[in-house]
Image (cartoon, rainbow, N blue to C red; front, side, top):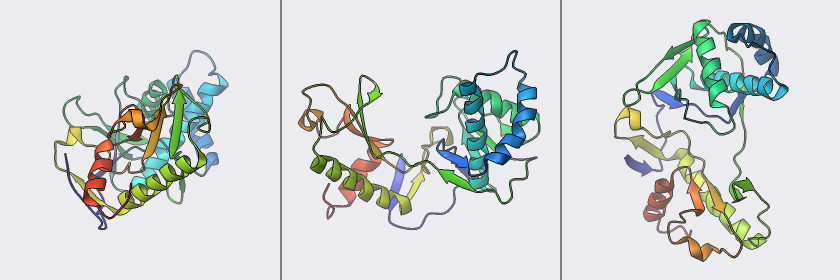
Length: 239
């Protein structure tokens, strides 16, 4: 459970979750690592352009997270059934194992119901490298699983109102003091605080159909509980 949410400065956590939206600004550094990684992975045939680009994206993401974490360890998902948005889990596991075997990254494998798997920098000199982060779309509308234009379903006034609500929430969570009181292996990613609202629409559906928790329609993601708690603790704020 989340023990408290207060508007105070938070202390650095002993470890952080990998953020799939982080990447290095320097593509040149990523490219310098690819030949050795590709030889170690040892594909039987040349990778398709899309797979090769995914490799580079994953390498950039892993390194950017290590840069941002500094001396802290980064919690990673090593289960083949897990997933990071926008990344291939199969390629992610393969590249992280290659980094570990090459001595570039210190990988500590966790247990399914025990400690999480974590990584830290080891043989790589990451000094001076800068990171960047892809912005999250505040309002996502999907139909049959695919992103669609929100205009047929909402007026510009409704879209503006919902985006303003999310900006208020994200400003609140950016500096909130949030800690995890439960077992480490069940911990939420407390660094992932930027919420978005996802709509799975069908013809004729309206916001009133969603109910007070917006389940399945306009759900606040990734952690709905934070949204509800924030509303309860901030009675002066209009949602």
